[in-house]
Image (tube, rainbow, N blue to C red; front, top):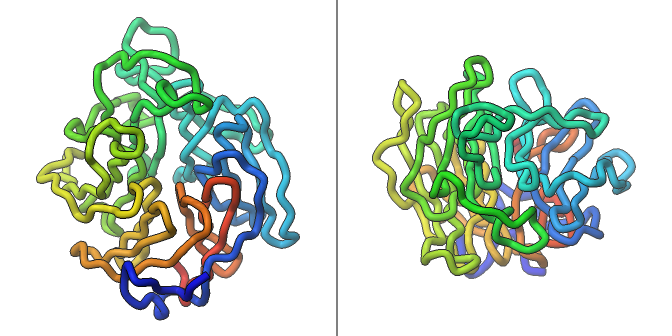
Length: 304
């Protein structure tokens, strides 16, 4: 493996303490990592294995945490430290409890979770929680259209949108409707900007393979959408923004990093195709990567 930089980008030696290290393997399609600081664990999806795996950082052991997970994908923590995750199989955003049970939050475009007669969501993919507690999530159709990633079905509201859901009021509304296959998403540190990955090119749904950037208004709308960067090779999937506003994105051959203005800072290679990433580590200086069959770790020079 090459060093922390490669020919596709610049020098990341000021950000990375070394190359990617594989810490666990055995998944069929690893996705959706979340760091649980109180137990020093990474929980992540094995989507095609229909299970959730747990990597225990202190012992370095991997175990099966949840089976029959209904093809869960991206996850994060809400303001109360609860796990919020996206379910392809149940076509909803839900809470994942530590005992493996789930509680639905929203599954229909009227903001409800239940059989209301309203159109169902497609297959929520990734989610972030804003400072006000609202959930912002992407809703492509991979769980309906990709074998082994959910249950075949129809796009009932006729698109693939980005939504904002307020658990306090039940209000759900689309904030981005001009993307083909919205995937990973992340806020700028002050939440004035929202970055969204469009991975349409991955399965031939369109030519898009870039990160879009939108300005977020005071009334929670996304305006002035534009392309920040196009990702090659492959497509962007999961993305994260660090405390300095730098954008870290997955791509086919590793992880690539951009400055807030879209300037390419560099990239670092990973032996498998990276799907998603999350900051973590007992010292806050690890970036965990889900990549095809494995979980990798990048050590950082400072907390994310």
